[in-house]
Amino acid sequence: MSWDHRILTDAELMPATPDNLLSRVKSLMAQQKTAWPQLRDAISGFDEMRYKKLLAAGSVVLAQNNPRRIVSTAARVDSATIKERPCFLCPENLPPEEKGIAFKEDFVILCNPFPVLKNHLVITSRLHTPQTVIGNIGHMLDLAGRLGDEWFVLYNGPQCGASAPDHLHFQACSKEGVPIFDEIESWKRKTITRGAGLEVFTLLDYRLNLLAARCSNPDTLVQWFNEAVKYLQNLTNSLEEPLINIIIGIKNGELTLIVFPREKHRPDCFFAEGDAKLTVSPASIDLAGVLVVPDPGHFDKITDIDAGNIFREVTLNDSEFEEWMTNQPLDDQSSAPAFQGAEPHTP
Ligand SMILES: [Zn+2]
Image (cartoon, rainbow, N blue to C red):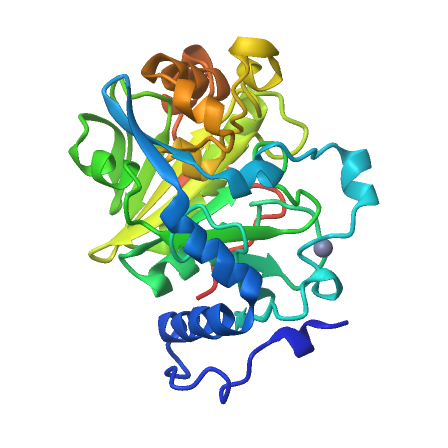
């Protein structure tokens, strides 16, 4: 089956404004909520979710008890398992009711049937091609700009959170209730470089190591990102792309791209037995401050200290982070080699 049968027509999207992506996304969500019972049930499940406010190094973390996410949180993503299962992002394997809208030439926007946040979308490649951010960061920035200030776009690397590492995709959600979007403005920051309309900074004594770049020009961010990630790849001796999660938001015309460099995929408590076990598997949304804890017993027992330890354990260690941070490209960006395979941003 091709994607043609999955794309809603303009008539089905009425009364969406044809050339306005946000308007079309809202129509898609309304249509899917009506036509797709599984999605409707999942959205109504938001009312059953429990939240618990934790503090990790002074930063707010909302633990979310979301039993429907156990499939994703505990998913086996080793290559043998992935090869054997039908890909849930290929059109022939989607539930019959699942439909989408086109995004640019190569992507389709779908509703996520296992939402963590409000307005949770999956943006999937039309091709069954491996998950990689290389060559795709421009598409994510473009999407963030077109969805506007209430949304953010996220990416989980194939070895740190993507439940379909074999099929290129990213996601988008509402920013509502996600702690990092307030903290990125209010937390004490350390500016690494500033110039040419680009500011690169980190948050001081934060619960994890992150690097953020802010600019109104997406092309500048694409160039910074490609060079910064190339350096991180070498620093961490990664054969393919380094372990990263990414979130992108826009506010008042300025894009903020946050990179979470990773040390490992899952914390030790994920593999522990008995009392020490906590089934958590952090990816972008968790790192942004909404920590999904599907098991009700684990949700009840998780503490501030657990949350702090989990974030420190799965994100890049201080010494390598420090080295990455102090070797940021900026002054002469044109002299640094572009990441192999990277493509320039096209609007
Ligand atoms: Zn696929």
